[in-house]
Length: 446
Image: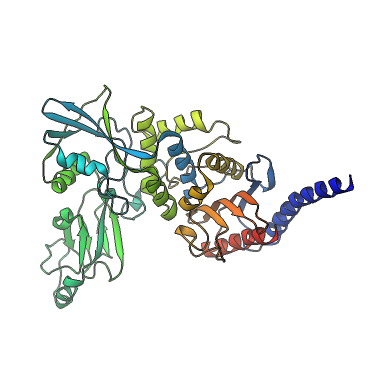
């Protein structure tokens, strides 16, 4: 009996100790003292919180939103991404997008859709009729149209909906020789550029402009103004393309070396599908580098897989109703990536979602998809140790920093956690370091 009481006391003390440790660290932290903080910690496989601090309050999750998109993908997609839907109609091939972002994407495996289209002999027509989204999500910063993290949403992305600029060693010397010449903003460029653009389709859209900083696209058209230097050696600049249906077919036609025509008609009969890439390759890229474009398109893939129009709002409503209605708190969920300032989740809800994700994905695979402390992705410079003990998704805005995932303690326990920080005025680096200190202490002590 004494032995039993002893072990029960140890178990209770363990939970109390985690809770006491968390509250003490948060209370005594000068870094976190003037912000909104919420934390939820659970043992893996248990619903009850081991420790919590304002875990029922709502916070802007930033890219922690991608965890919800990831779970939606797990619930709707199989091992492969459905890349294209098509109808063979006599000597015509009618195609429509599923939202799949992989076609000619520079950072994903080669899509099988490319070879499929290349080898077809019929006249090909693309219909965007099933696409109901706007180019940007609700609550996005529309002034960020030139920034790499905000490509436009489209039914059939091509080249990741970006133009990629990189230094061109061969042309750099020629460009330097021309630096003495004055350039007139808007005038055609006369000298060889010190950088290149991929796809080369955009070569004709370049304009030398001494007032530009790096590469600057005009807001409503694909005109790329560049400085004399353009892109410094060793760097890459991705600039979102102003995507339209016409641009989609032009890019496809140019790359496939065959004409793709645009037709806006519904296809309301059962269509055949072409799979593109393994699903895990999309998930891993999305999580490791926090790729917003992939997350947005994933929610369109979810819509397509469930017979819905390509509409983020309808996809989210469906995912909540069918797969997330058992989460602790109502979701205020507006986009796939977390770029929206309108998203609001509670820490305990994110912890509950992480429990559901772990039930669907074997731990070894899951920990390879998520960034791991000191090793990969957005956590490569944090939580360094002999081996990774944090596997988590980060989410950052100005004044916001969140991290949610799995933590393995030195005693071998796996904890599920969500640590959310909103509305701070300190540098984000200070908040990240403080969160890292507290979570590392949790790893060390328990």
